[in-house]
Image 1 (cartoon, rainbow, N blue to C red):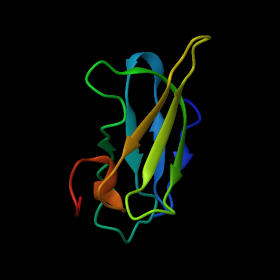
Image 2 (image 1 turned 90 degrees about the horizontal axis):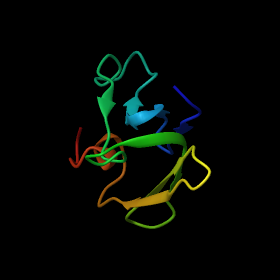
Image 3 (image 1 turned 90 degrees about the vertical axis):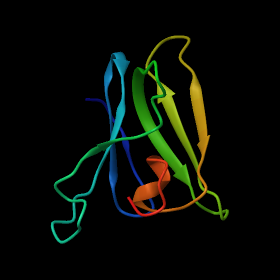
Length: 95
């Protein structure tokens, strides 16, 4: 896995730097109901990519998540979510 990034809701996004790689969200808090349930996010899309890093801008009501690809011509993807927290990257509101 590659760099990834932390979210404002205190989880970690782990990025796979391989062909068709994906991004997974991990909750490091052992008291959390999602701690032992890492989950693939929507960031990789259906085709995946060679992902490097993630940043989250949560200043607005709908957070924007940015993910970079580790290629010389790699894309900077932007995903706008309708909610914050665990569900923001999975297409759900409560995880």
